[in-house]
Image (cartoon, rainbow, N blue to C red; front, side, top):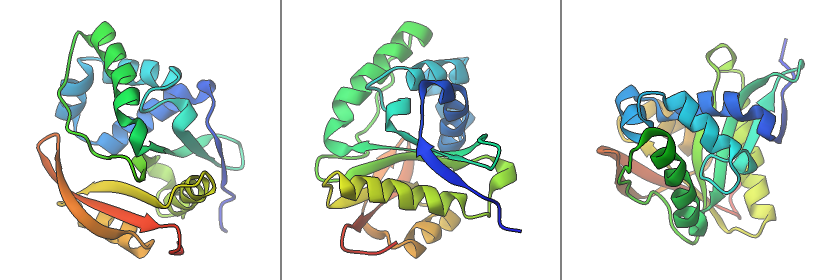
Length: 192
């Protein structure tokens, strides 16, 4: 039986689960601690609960099951806003973890950027990520963006194939937190 999944705009009340999902999307405990200190989930939750940060609930769509429990999330924003959003994000990191990580820009003006996407383990392989990608692309295109982009670790072949199967095409590469990444984009006139 196919599970009923709904997509909605996140609220501040979703901060804890979004923080967990962003941590899963980052995926590397060392990177999390380098970025957020010894209590990364606490720092991420503060970032998510704050407006105008990279991982803010304002920039997040939530997938819920039939019980309205969050089962996945996707974070995205206008690439032109990266520096403003990152400044607010890093201010919270500095205040809470006394860290000032140096991070390469992973996006830029000219694309709506998917920053983070993850689905809770018990709900994977059920179409949740596909619905989240579709919903955020529709949102981005409705807001007037011509392209939606993201980066994926070159070592994560499964993720790269997933995005390619959704219509994303390679447009370059980037180094992010010492990982080699592929930059993928989909244009407004391509279908998901």
